[in-house]
Length: 299
Length: 120
Image 1: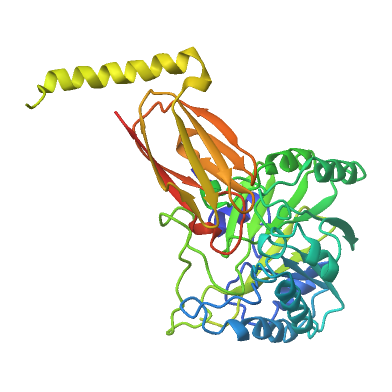
Image 2: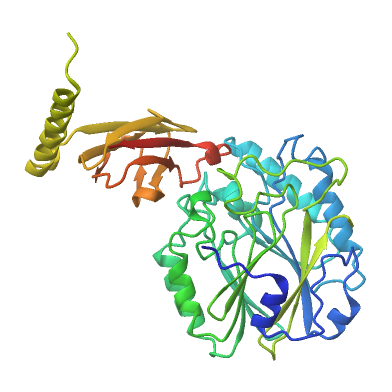
């Protein structure tokens, strides 16, 4: 049974308190109060699937990513950085076509008026060649960095097509965490969920529990991921997990239909419904990240 | 001449017990079910088993690594090209149980599935 939380419940559990904006209807502008009250904020974009073609689920596939770039560029306060949490491109068996799609993706997001962009791979980018093409274009598959007092850890749970982090990466994570204090604010970035969200639909990481165990001693941890093409929130004890909406098509709610395909069909009456990106305000001194979901177009 | 229903049931019971004895005498003597995996299908897509009768499932892959996962029967293994993965199974409940590929094998992987039907 999924231990899903509604927004109000999540906010209460996360200890974010009253007055925190958790708005799906912010439009393209960042909430000034949110930005002013934070040490910094960044934007998460995910599951752009550049190269995907499917008129029934997104006849505007060629326009969606450029539209998101324009929307982020129009934010009133530019984010400190942007993170793409995987499935930048859609799967192809052709290694040349894969690289062509990655080059096109990189050119489009090169229009973002943000200096720093962090990339993670999704299984569509990296599972068929174990990340070979992804590394050529975007660098390492897992890495860590610090920003204004917050420690970020990007994990790769996709280059193994069986959805494993693997012992070597877990050893690396253990060594990285050993350098952190228990109260350090830590944001983990992944493509697949680390917990068993819905394993029957591949919405899990086979050895994700080992990573969660390693993170458990740290008091202030949030995990941001994509893969499931919809907003979702979950607590594993004190660790918060947040899935963001995609930029290509929404997926059905977990378990709501026999299989996860077909995805949610395009509604001509509500174009781009269910697609969007996320603003995350982060503070180094408090145990919190604050999320603001931004639809690609206003309802 | 039609076989009386009671005798038919007796033959069926003897058959099941016989298979069970074979299973207990050694895994190599168990009935073997061969399943091949290739993008994005299994062959055969439907496997029929008897409840309580041990079988050995032999998996091979024709093109690349695939997964074979039967969540409701607590079973998951990998299938590799050029190799045979063997797994023993004694279905302990009847019903229809879906098996799926849980190793990402391309666009279409989501639709790669089959069914094990376990009969009483």
